[in-house]
Length: 76
Figure 1 (cartoon, rainbow, N blue to C red):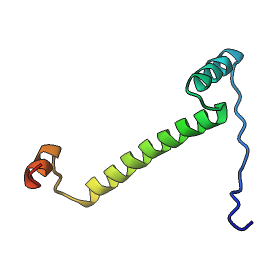
Figure 2: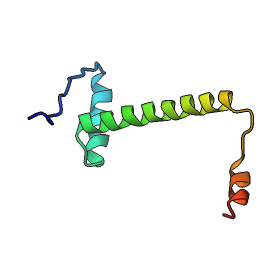
Figure 3: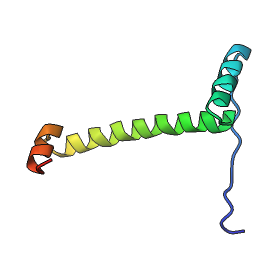
Figure 4: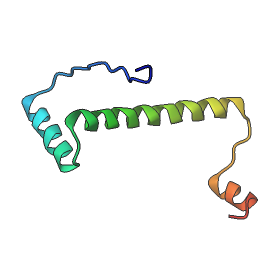
């Protein structure tokens, strides 16, 4: 049982109209509402982390390269 994943509950308040929209879209995607919302939150956080990491890398390095420069250097 040491590998058991511990979970926490998260409650959100929403209007009935928003609840129905979320429920309908999650169902359309073949997902539970909680799975759908968790995917959205994780995607948003990953985008934020990417931007944060990019800004950190830019501040630490003076030279940057465009995608075309990288492709050219690597014969892509």
